Length: 434
Image (tube, rainbow, N blue to C red; front, side, top):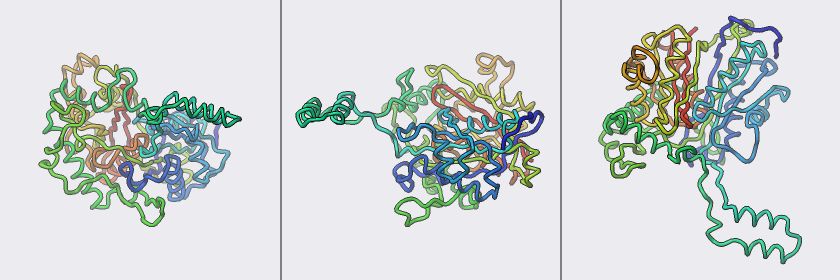
């Protein structure tokens, strides 16, 4: 399981990847908690790969939507998946880049020789969101619990008014440092970068068209498991956000959500609240060879970046991408596949525009030339988060699995993945085919 010597110079292999169907909040997976989703996908990943669970030394897992029911989701996922309980497990959170953080943490542990085999991933149920009670209701409930007499109980109840009974939305629904919802920040990015409504709707349309085609062509068949959710009478086999029949005309009719008078962001060109989970099985290259596994691919390089949330909240991937490419010794033109997480179509368009801009590179990146233009034929070729869905902590695992499988289908060599995240964070990963 563990090792004392360092694996310097060894590549980190992604041996297998799997996810649940991604379902819109409040639909087919609504009765499953985040830990249930994570346990299910990790258990299935181990069974499908046929790895001896005793070979696994580490599980790093994450969630974005916090829960009051467990302190360390990774540990509960491991136990729920039926894995040996002497396997180390800890949790991470980097907002929407959480499963990428889990992946790179596992990679570091492998490269340092601490472990040969690890599992990384993330899950979120945006249906099962904790709600806050008012401070007065909280105090009354605590006093009621401690009350010894009827008089004390009645006094605790009398201290609250009807308005104290109303739950309030969680604080993480807005950016704490700015008070902006993410959609409001995306609206600002659309205006700052001259991104039109038509451009955003076109990105959303392509996302749905390509995702529908991928499902119909069997592209996702081996990377999406079947789920049985309570009341266990129907198998959930596909993402239920994908709209095969959507049209540009239908998207154009939707009303703006965040700026109702002058806005361009609608429910149609933004990713929806989604439930789902993903997981990756990772090994040192020598261990994969010793166990007879044929890797899907290798982690070539990665980078994280941050920007001021009050500036352009979702622009950090543009800062992370050139760092990851430089560390890989490659350029954007060398990429056969580019996966850009679609939080909002406006964010995708703004990121692509900045990558292609010499002026942006000189002003913000300290580079004399633009990072480069992304070929539309290489971008999100099987759809993106707008169509497939976005269970926050699970999206990175989906991107890695999908990109490596697509490289194999195309006979490609390298893929670039970028993810924007709350707090003004961004991540970029370069993957290499076997």
